[in-house]
Image (cartoon, rainbow, N blue to C red; front, side, top):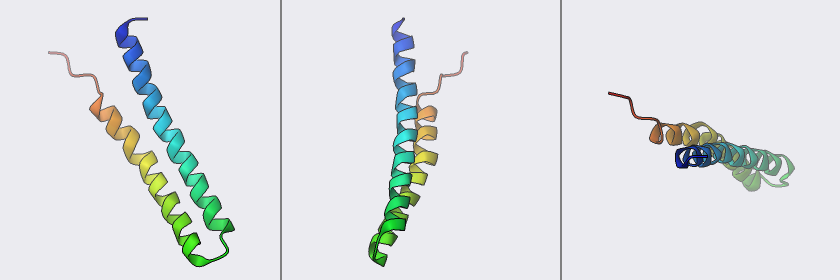
Length: 73
């Protein structure tokens, strides 16, 4: 594999890893919100789930935009 292939693979893994981490965070927040006995912990679980959904939506797109291939002249 060429160095550019290794670079592309590591960037792809970073994007996929951020999606997986966001998904795990959303699941954790939902489990916390459902199983919590009192309302402050439920609110915390909902906040964690919403922030994880924002991570799923924003981080991979910003990484792809940052690492996009420059246009050819």
